[in-house]
Image (cartoon, rainbow, N blue to C red; front, side, top):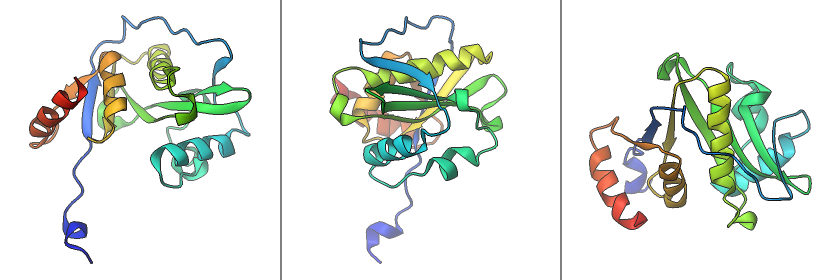
Length: 177
């Protein structure tokens, strides 16, 4: 065992959007279609999320077995019948009755420049509004700088849920600018 393996994994950073009433317009470029999960999407979702996160992901075990799974909470953007972005508008009691968790956001690197991460995340926020949710949170990792920049553009702000989060955010902000 390496000494680095003995170190506890740092907690994920938390970001929050306290109001969902003022969401920007969601407009996709021609050729891109926004929709929710339908049976048969599992393989495309697995491929996209596994590629983006660098580890195998399985739709069935990751989402379907979750008691909060509902097909309309899994937002997808497709291009030429291929899933190119996803975000989940999830709910967990841990966050409170009126707070949704934006979960598993991924956008294909082959479609970079089309703002798909932003758009599919915005679609998840619209799903929260549809469900009567007032606030949204998400968890992310320090190294996911493009995602953090996207979340900031969407109106999320850091939520200091752990003692080391302020110091970690102080390191992230200069790199984003």
